[in-house]
Length: 252
Image (cartoon, rainbow, N blue to C red; front, side):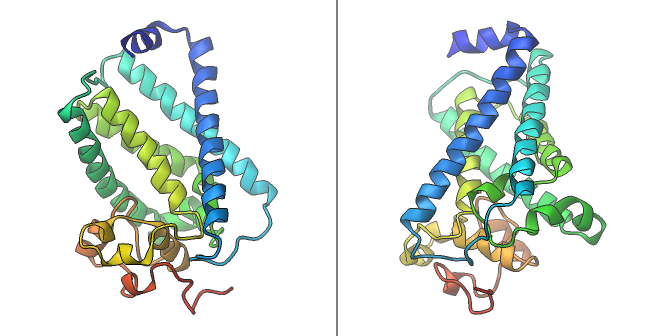
């Protein structure tokens, strides 16, 4: 790992940029592949109406997301080379604690950024593109306005510039970020119904949680947990009762 980190420090940009572009493209393909398999596996447990046939603009927007994510990654590379971003190389208990810290901090920060994106000043030209697809599928995770994508990516760069996390902690967080994002757009609920009755587990954001947000824009703004929605009164009132179901008020 240290040799890989060392090579990134000195790798020419003409090699680094295509490599990072390929990395982000692979992340997209893996997320879609895993998500489609889970959606097929639990196809009898839908939490949103079935998505319509794939549209050309969905594919083009997803490709643009790969490009904007690569831009953020390259900026992060420069910030690291300039020592604005620093990270540790330990893999012990503190590295695992980094995962928890990053999840909670980013969940809170993205909660407020997400609510801001729904403000009338920003929604129509910034965030509406994502909600034009109110019957989500795994690809919907990557249907974002490039400026919105850059905003969320910049938020991540600010957090890791201020918090000296471990390489392992950041890597695990980023994997969980894609996992949660994909799960939120499955259109099916892989978690069992009893999940919503367990005191701690019920506050982890599953597919039903984000599906409700696509169906009701005034609720469920969190990403990984329900904690901030619960604290700030934006959790849909019937959320726990409707886990694993398609609500009657959703058009089939």
